[in-house]
Image (cartoon, rainbow, N blue to C red; front, side, top):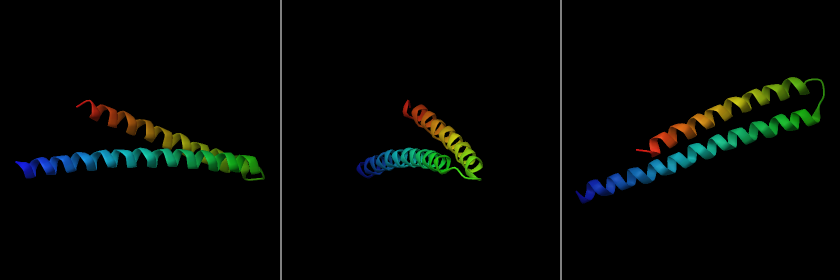
Length: 79
């Protein structure tokens, strides 16, 4: 059973590492799209408002995914 315990501990470490990777990836996506939208808005120009609006739509999408991911991970952490 020592091998089974080591495998289980390895699984838990991998699971925790993957959780952190998913959360950091979601955070980076949100921040990148926010920065892209703000830079596009600041530059202005003819296509500025359209591109900025597109960036902000993606930001909202990525924020929703990030919040959903946090909710799922928190619900799994209760177990």
